[in-house]
Image (cartoon, rainbow over all chains, first blue to last red; front, side, top):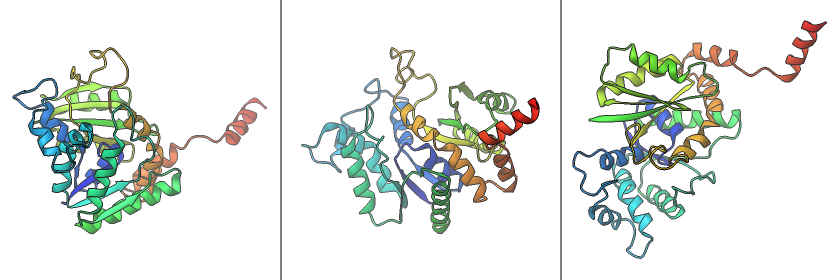
Length: 145
Length: 143
């Protein structure tokens, strides 16, 4: 069982496919859970302490927007833990009220330059693309076993 | 450690969120919190219990049920829209966007054999009726 980081890190489809094919998907909710459900809430409501920005500084400089460093404090350790990655190209709806384009670019760069097996895909638009999407993920994950 | 999973049903699936909730209520696991939502259910419990339940839930419809991790517990005031003055919670838009692709992914899973041959038949049976065929049926019935 390999640890596979998925991008977008909150993707339901990718999490499910990796999980049902017997691997561990490294996703954003797992990192959020550690903070949100910790027994000792040091800094309510989300338990973000001064330690988090420090973790973020390992991936982004101090002059980079604080939102990037905050997000990297959660995603960065997942990238370090990853043994493989599935990257889906931004379909245009990953940036919005809760998304950050700069973080997306940085995450995708760090994954690509880490030297782990990476599968790059696009979200399917029709049935034939969906079949290809699932086949490629299946073949990639089988190759990791 | 208690974890939360989001169980989302594909529009093609004949399984309702209430079916999933009933499966959990009828299981041997008692310390599981279930909350129905518009797109599926959220389940919260000890990690090993939830992992076992995930296998049972997925077996209800291997190509039509999708499961993802969730950071916040169900009804958490930091995310629950009832406590935040309404509006969709952050994260809903991702689920909404990906939900539109689920019928395609369900068919692809069935056709690639990832969910077993029985699932292929099930998904093929559930294909929407074409307009022409519907017109033929109407003519046959009314003639």
